[in-house]
Length: 417
Ligand SMILES: C[S@@+](CC[C@H](N)C(=O)[O-])C[C@H]1O[C@@H](n2cnc3c(N)ncnc32)[C@H](O)[C@@H]1O
Image 1: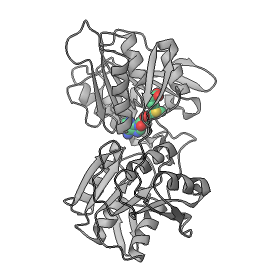
Image 2: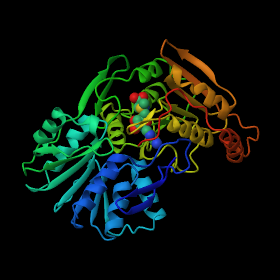
Image 3: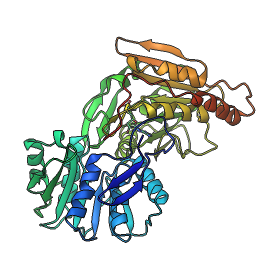
């Protein structure tokens, strides 16, 4: 895996987040390089700028290498991007004093004179982002959008023109192009949420634009709903919660339980919270908080004292454009580390992802609870030999499990380039 970013005289060392991960994926791609090259070639001045969808800080670090005090607003929906950018700025001794962060729902500041953006995979979310920009950018503001050449077509340029202003694409360089859009200064209304029902669970679901399974129940989630674990669970984590569907149904099945929802996407966490309220899931017989919602990378920052007895997980198998199962591996390791002794990890996965090999390696046990042609539900139990020292025991097991490279599925991705 390459970590040396080198373009137009700018040299950086860049890692994905977390930096120690079982993947061979690069922290930037050629569209990042193209955007930086475009700015250097055009001798761009360090005007008040916004950077949107910078995966792990390549654009931010690139601009700060050109001018250390470049005033930047960084917008991201992914906590791993925020953490990765921060980590890469420190690694490259770049000062973050001229930076401010907003998430994908915060109000964007006025006075932005230039926008640098990466085209996200989710085009509904992209339209949402363009409309957000249309609300604050004065007419004439340039917006540079970097993307793979094969993702750019007439319909994409029309979408940009419809939501923000006229757009044209550069020549191709390293199979990427830079689209230049000039904001027309006309504010567009933001899109409304997408709403649907899960009638068999009597749940109403509302989704913001960058949330997984935007229009309907995911088929993996569907089989999870039909096969919830049996037991007396009191503290449950919905890991990678999306709109919260698994945690919401867990509360219906275990009304005494406390549910902790976590996702890397801020919009997902916000939707899970909205769905909790919408479905009135607080049990009136209990006092105190019954659910919490965290924008985080897996269980990285979960309160040390919190030991769940059940973790529900429908893991992602991509990160941005890259297809990878390293996040699933990280989720399983974190689950093993944080579960209480005897606690259960309940996972759904596409059969060909072979999650049972990973779970067996980490937990030393794995049971198939249900399956159909495409999906399997797997369960692994944390059984600590030294019940008094679950943390120490978890660390030893994790070290052993991590010694060999983690079992990779057929889906393991190629490095971005
Ligand atoms: C397959 S979706 C499952 C969503 C939901 N649980 C369901 O079943 O419909 C995986 C989820 O994991 C989230 N995710 C990806 N990387 C993550 C990370 N590093 N930490 C926490 N969540 C992550 C994604 O944003 C996405 O919502």
